[in-house]
Image 1 (cartoon, rainbow, N blue to C red):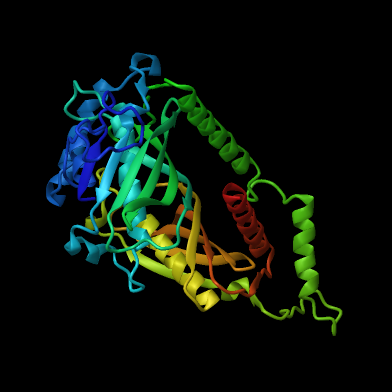
Image 2 (spheres, rainbow, N blue to C red; image 1 turned 90 degrees about the vertical axis):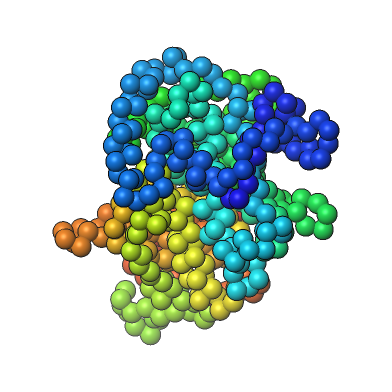
Length: 425
């Protein structure tokens, strides 16, 4: 981001509304600087790699300012965390190079990076204590619950506006919703809606820390908070029903068995003799892999690899996988259920594996799995799992599993696809 405007809660009658140019503007112009620089100031992180580890070591003294219970902390309103940020692609042509892709559109991976940074800033705005120069909290991304696209094209030469605020809080976790719009043909049009879940931890990022409760001031805010509760319940239910924990449902087992029967070679009486039906592709042939060496340039304010960078790399690999599979340019429909299982350290070898795991009509469901490899011990550790739904302008081959493991990936992909269609439907 090049500009950021923080909403003045006392002057803003509408949570996410801007009245630019009016004598009684609802926005108090507070700060103009990159978001990530502001986050460094909040936690006291250094911009210099040589001094960075020392600065983080000094944060241990901030533990004394952590609350021992949530009751010790003052309640905050949704307006306290409301943030508006601008990406001036239209008014600053030199900025476009970073965001431009070869289709003359905006690189969506860059937007993911900006959303991640803004979500962290929103949560720090909710927990900010004016009496302290630095925040004792380490706020990190736990998961991306949902990103729903509202338009297919993001113009590279038009300003983009990000707005967002906290919508739900637990004792140590925070949900932040963000809306992105773009100024085109004299008006702002919707681009996407995103929901992130963040967690608060101590200054050393080792254990959970309490955050401010949320004060609800209107029926509208109560409804927003209730939706946050629903989202939490849904995530728990999905985790409980995970195919990594329980067997598929009866109808899912029937689906997999029918797929198996449709690929049996009728000329033989063998369960091992499999043939593809017309316009089908084995899942084994619908993969793509990548590798990233994690350099200090991509570090976050806590000296680990920036979550937005991981999302960008996973998205770009997933997009390339869908493009190669379909033979044409795919359009993103939704990002769903990105889980951050463990942090990625500087210097890690990051292995990315993308798999087309489900197709239906003109839609492609892609799962990207990332893991770090320790070259000394040769141990692999899963760090993230990403789910992307793409759409193309033609019917595509059906992807078909062969093994039981691939069948579970197929069902998992179908579940995510069905959930995306329901939420948009």
